[in-house]
Length: 93
Image (cartoon, rainbow, N blue to C red; front, side, top):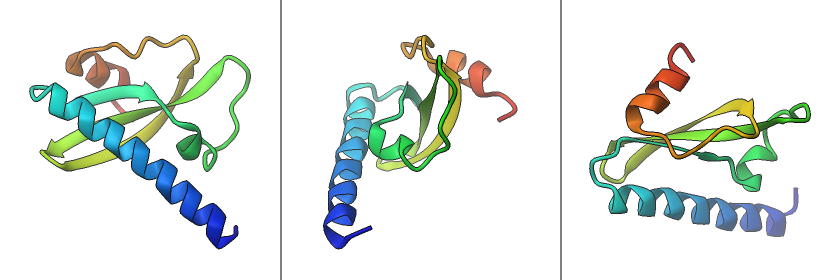
């Protein structure tokens, strides 16, 4: 990968991180976020069969500190879930 391509990916990933930060800033009581993985994240993950897609589970460990993990699920999965619903969805992962 060229230097320009790496810089472009880093810039796109920075926008993803800003989106997660904004989500938690607007919802200070939330600890978890489920969202569709952005292309810049999913391009590094294995290709999925039709009808499946990658989702990011973002956990706010403390203000400003977040961790992401990726799950594959039905492309029709609703992402408007509460923290407890996200926990139930990801238990055992």
